Image (cartoon, rainbow, N blue to C red; front, top):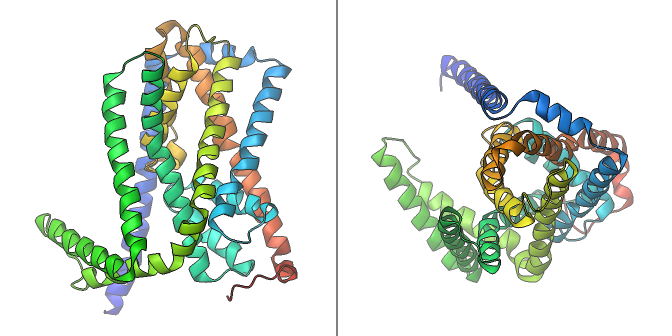
Length: 359
């Protein structure tokens, strides 16, 4: 590679990142503008929030505290010997990074923290992969649970049922794929090799260049995935799955409390409808187009919940969506910053609690 190429490549990456950030901000601005000029009025939202009393805020703070306390359980289940006292900042600091910058911005923070606590690079990578997988599976399962709830309460929603069937198929297929990957190293390598061949074939249709060694590279990565995560998946899946479910339940509890404190009663919007909207938005925002789905999530909640109630409640629903995002997302940013500061000041003393893992 020539000097000009070396200079041009970082420049292209910078401009690409800038373009992505600007595009994301433009999407947020357009969505929020449409939301608060076409669907609801700011005055209605402000009035609904102003009507909250001290008891309402206390409920929101209490539920949010419980949610923050249970989120580290998934990290603990996916990372042997990790204590809650470290899992809490290990969740908060990376979550704050991901809440501000879309994409895998949390990986660098989590990797640095785990390495300072004595975990090897392989153990840290395995923890990151497992947390991502269990969280993704939990989000994919939400529409299935919502559809089951609709049937159990004698209700019907064709769109939700269709999405539930698709999500259920993805969930079953994903679990089966993980089972095959862990079955044996030979099977893992065969799956990785097959995925590489398929990827090269699809890329050729769009005239996208891929490395000739892609199939072999993916075979090696599949084998590495099996080696790194196999023991944890076999022995701690029940713990991790339960922790992931508790994490989603905590988020839903904040949403439901937000809906109730703004004055929307169950007769106007029951908890099953709220859960269905929660399931759809969690799945929709699992792809980080904007930081934590900013703009997209708010608009989706207003549209979905208004459709399940009536247009006269649009202002209250928008207020509930804003309150929910305040306690489920915005709150993590200062808490994450404090967690990062705590870790930065104490990481030199991490050797006081050594792990058996080799760095």
